[in-house]
Figure (cartoon, rainbow, N blue to C red):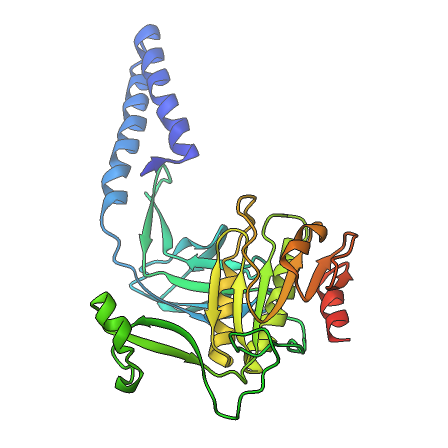
Length: 343
C-alpha cells in the first residue's frame, strides 16, 4: 500500500496550508489543510479491504518454440465495477483492462527462451480520489516453456555401436551389451539380478543392458561464450531432437556440468528441448572426458580447444581453425550451420 503521485502532492500541501493558516491567521487554510490530511487517511481503509476478485488462469500451449504464438486465458469473476491489472510473464509486464466478469485472452511474449512464470494477476486498487494505491496479487500462476527454435535437421549419420570394445560391432541380432550394474528399483526383472554384486554390497543389484545395434550420440554445448549463444542452442536443439526422434540414445553435455542422457524417441526429444530451454551462459566449468559413441561439439568460440576430446564433428558459429580428425562445419547463424550439417 503506497501513495500515488497525487497522494504525495496532497500530503505535501496539507501541512503547508496549515502553516499558512497559523502564521497568517486564516482559518480557511487551517480547514483546508485538515481536509486534505483527512482525505489521505480516509483512503487507506478502503484500499486495504480484501479483494473479492476470482481469477482462473491457463496457458496454451504450455511449451512453445521461440517466436511462436502462445495465449494466456483469464477467467474473471466478481470484477465489480472493473479495474486495471498487470500480468507478468518473466520480465515482461502486460496491462489488462477488466470491465466485467468475462474471459480475457492475450498473447504472451515468446521472444526470450526460458522457463517463464506467468502471473499472478496484480490488481491495482485505489481510493475514489486516487490518493492511495495497493497492488493485490490474485489468482494462480502458470509456467510457459519457451524452447529454442529448431531448424529442419538430419540425425547424426555416423553413430557408433554400443559394444564395450573399440572394434567393429558384429553382435548377432537381438544381442545385448552389459552397460552397468546398478541398484534394484521396483519394476526390474528378477532374472537381471546380479547375485555376486548383491552379496558383496549388501544391496540388491541388477544388470543394466543396452542394445548394441542402437547408435549413441553425445552433443557438447559450449556455454562459455555469450556471443551467438542463442544460435548455439538452436543448432544443438535441431541436431539432438532429430537424432532422438530417429531412435538414437542421446546425451547432452556442457562444460558447466550438465549431463543428461535419454533413450531415443519422441518423448526423449521433448526432454532434451526442456533441458536446452533453461540452458544459460556460464564462464565457469571444464571440458568433460570424451563420451563413447558419436560425438558432436557446438560452439561459438575457438575450435582448437576441443582437439583433445577428438570429436567427430564440430559445429561452429564463425571463428577459424581446425580440429585434427574432425569435420568442422561453420556458419554465420544457426540456419546456415544446420543447412551445411544436412549437406
